[in-house]
Length: 245
Ligand code: NAD
Figure 1 (tube, rainbow, N blue to C red):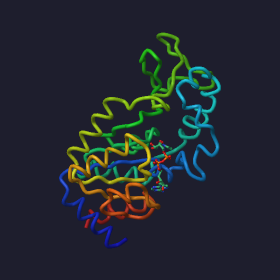
Figure 2 (cartoon, protein in one colour):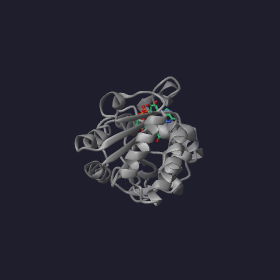
Figure 3 (cartoon, helix red, strand yellow):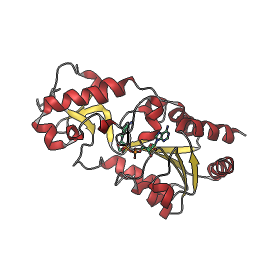
Figure 4 (cartoon, rainbow, N blue to C red):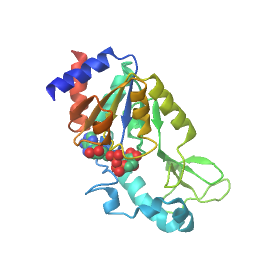
């Protein structure tokens, strides 16, 4: 790992355009489990609550579970050292942006400014007529929340199964893939598409891929140049120290 860590630090130091690409793994140390796997959220909850047609035909039943997971439980989470390290790197001009698959708002809370939320976020609610509201304006004891302009049911502004990627985030993410010469992939299996195409596109354009994960992934087997095995916060802390040398 030491030699790989040095290689990663060298790549970032020499880079003119470093971008981070993050998945559920970066938020595990903030107490939010991934969806899949042994202790994943889907081992406890039925993913049908995030199916668009099920949601609109069972808004109350869906919202009861959505509130429990994405507002009561996720709402307690705070950014960890890995989120904070990315914000610090952006602040120093080393990192240009974060492309995240996460919907938990922790990059923004950590202080990152250029954050492209590929799957949307839980911070906002949206109705079928595209009226947007801050979720914090609603009393989620009174479910389902209704649009104050058209009375349609509000859904969280992250994508459900069967929905497309938000256009602006999609464009910004692939623009970043075009410009990047280094991508730091943190805590993503590489199994979720089209998100996984972002680092793949960057690699095809000549970017070097640094990957941080306790486990090997589909990326490690295909596009990763430097694999740093470990937890996001431990490895990011070492990278920060190395960049200060
Ligand atoms: P994923 O593709 O996001 O993979 C999770 C990865 O995190 C795994 O490879 C795992 O080995 C790794 N990991 C676990 N602990 C880690 C740590 N401490 N440091 C670094 N990496 C660690 O898989 P998923 O959970 O099935 O997610 C599916 C989709 O749903 C993704 O788009 C994901 O971003 C999203 N999701 C978001 C959140 C959130 O907003 N926090 C939570 C769950 C899922």
